[in-house]
Image (cartoon, rainbow, N blue to C red; front, top):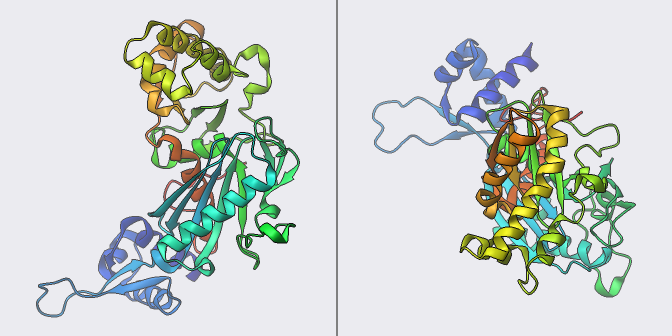
Length: 380
């Protein structure tokens, strides 16, 4: 009973912010003495902090308490084709620092791992947070992931077969270029497919917060998808759910390359979309072709899942409005009636944000036995 009472009290503080004992009692249905007993125990354990009286208070003000969000921190890392992005957050998910490092598409395994370690170390250094205060790290990567191992990846050189969780907690083999490991003391490192993490983020804090069935299409240097069914992330038996790009007939494979090839000399995908937005006919035709490719695989997924919404995200999310309008029309023809098509509100930080979420779930597992109380999204 005490365990249940403690979970109820802490959930109220975690989700509602600073509260008095009376307010917590009203929200949980527990007696005030029970609430006070639980809160005092949390204060002793430094999980909850008592706040000073508000300025201007007269008489004896009611004691106010809040969850000690700065009692620990988590990191979300997005390891992609062109970048490594680290988001550092407190235990309420409040972002404290973001750091980005550019990497070359052809960078090998060692270079990319070094970039991840250095970016995390730099983010911690800039924030003034000692590495020892990290509670967990979430990592997003392209490819199929099982138990921290990237079993298949077609876009990062040397990435297939990599035990990414192990690699980030083990010192590099080359002493000459050695970078300290993320942590050598058993810090949890949870690895997940990047499209799955983007989907988690959109359901947690993005464009899919209000639905229980959704598909997130991650469009950038490759196209992949994540699926939520009944409010739960669906990974599949081997972690490969949503990897429609592996089936060439669905036209996701190579779609970004075809977009670039249709506009030679444009430089990159962002330039093509910028030209299309300015009215360039060739770029507009290329974007229309890319949208056709996107619609083919998306329609197949929608007919299988029947979600309430499709979220277009990833590196091209800034051009999401250009894609979304055409995608709506094509999906209406391919799988009527189509779901609502939405543009990501998280941009290219969606993967790292989802990584923060899974790190938070791990870091707070002992505090919230039933899962993270805000936007908890268990996997299966």
